[in-house]
Length: 520
Ligand code: KIV
Ligand code: ZN
Image (tube, rainbow, N blue to C red; front, side, top):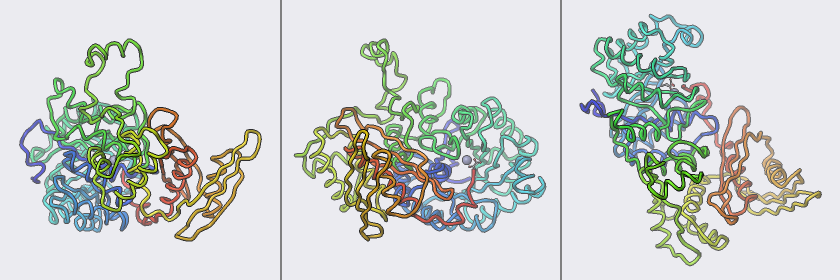
């Protein structure tokens, strides 16, 4: 049994985070290497047991990202995904061997619908593939996870034979995913209970749940799986993931912690890191968190009605089942103004969990000073937006140099813009049906490509009319969807920068193999 799964405490739940793999498969959630490292560092510091860092065979970029995360890992086991194909398994082993503790996670479909239409293989052929590929992985590394893709739509008798074969071949973790988000909690509980009780050798492996949220049941199913005997939960920060996403890490962790009376299990997650991890992932993946998202949404601890506010003032426990502080949400505090110096800014960044290199610090400080000149009160949220923005714009090929927008009621809406494209300056002018239309079209004209605008949204970082505007843009081109965001005191500048942020991501090449090698 692997080092991570040799913990004999039967109530201990291992948290397997797949934000960098299943999460990154969300349309528009592509992250750069720098962003992936930032996310991995936050997960490692938070106490995540296993980080699935990517799918090494999918592209050179994915391979390099898994290697880089593996090299930086301090406490977490680093997993790399592999199909049940020898070349995938070799490539995953090559990537995770750089980690102090690595894991190969190999998977194959087991349901009749996948076997008939996707795999075109018989049940016996798949059984043979499981034995061979798990044994191959186990010859390369001690820690091997095997997943039965679409387990919840697989007849239980056949699933039991597959699990038995995987354990016999040396799998140390057995994952039974609800790949299409079809299960309901009672079924999920029963599947784990039956398999753990009946499969010979089941006591030699840790069982894992991996739930998708198509019916909004991913967290409930994960917890039911634990009740059925699973001791590893696969999840993502903010519930990022294919289609409707995966089970949200912050929700399963806080459910277990808050309802320990009904669910006597524990994780080793430091829950005060949850809010920060949510912000880092939201910024890295350019994926806004819905306001009423449990645990980390803007409104998760907001009390609006008079009765609730009255109760809160008398005793917070009247309407709060956990404290904001327990998930790392701090009061919005006034930080500094334009007279604050470098040392104070550095201290503030540290308090907010950022440690920037010299160049990044210098750039962030210049932007902070600029912001403080334009905005009277600079809040923690402003600093977070400013730093996340800086990280997100590293390596941009298109940059904005100057912009002038004229907007008249009943008249023209015109944007004059100067940009640099790969270092070369170009100026354009565009008249649109509104200011934002003029800005976005001016950029398209300068770059000479026609991405489709899938989403455009603007939000205030804090309250007040002098609040920074946080703009989100999602673009689609040739079937690829990317997101961008930016925060600025001026809404139009924020919009232009968010559009450019997305555009720059479109220009980052992704390996062709990635398209054909996506997992569920
Ligand atoms: O949902 C799924 O089945 C997956 C597997 C690759 C584990 O993500
Ligand atoms: Zn999945």
